[in-house]
Length: 297
Image 1: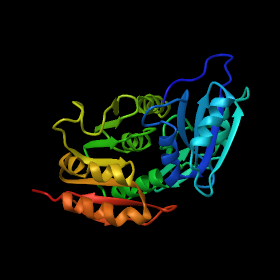
Image 2 (image 1 turned 180 degrees about the vertical axis):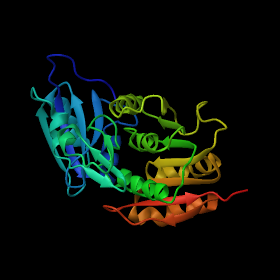
Image 3 (image 1 turned 90 degrees about the horizontal axis):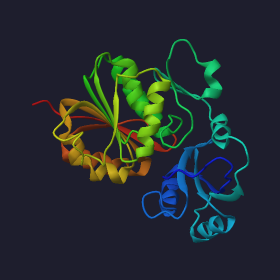
């Protein structure tokens, strides 16, 4: 993802609305994980269980050329328009309702006056990083984590792997006194957003955020955690299974998400082979989360 706008510049936006399971593929096709001809490519949570993929271009011709190359799945829509002089991120955020997941309440700035008194509130606005809490994957993780807290599970070391906007790490920081909490992501923009959200939620000093490519990082080398959040996607989760289990302390727990319902059995089998006892959790909006625990020595 690259910075695109400067004062007075009005790029052309190719905007794709799609279900979450196809939105990532569309973003990759536009260059999010490879060669990018766009000025930027970003993913946002959107209303009605969809996601918005937005690619910005210098000209309308460039945006049209990118659209022609896409193989849009059924149910997806594509529009091209020059960005007006308005805050389009705020407009997207305004369509997102707050999310109540266990003890936690995820809200945007537009709902700041509607936060209940009996919740752990996490303030996250729509932005550059996936994982604002409005999506079923992040909400599923929060529900599992909330149940662990209800059962007096209090990990002293926590990793939020692929942290996105940092919601899960912030949830840990708000509930675990004195814990060592680390958030990592391969995308520098995600770490930038996480740092902003750390300040927004007044948890400075309670967690740290670093750019890291999976476990191929000095930040994670040789470390083990009593709790790992891994809200990624089924494919990358299975590739990282052995590393995730190795980084889990004996008796520690792993919350896995980003798993389409139809892939839950394969991910479960993969992590059980890698050494975890895995419990399937209820589906949420077509996505399944898993709770794994590593046997004690």
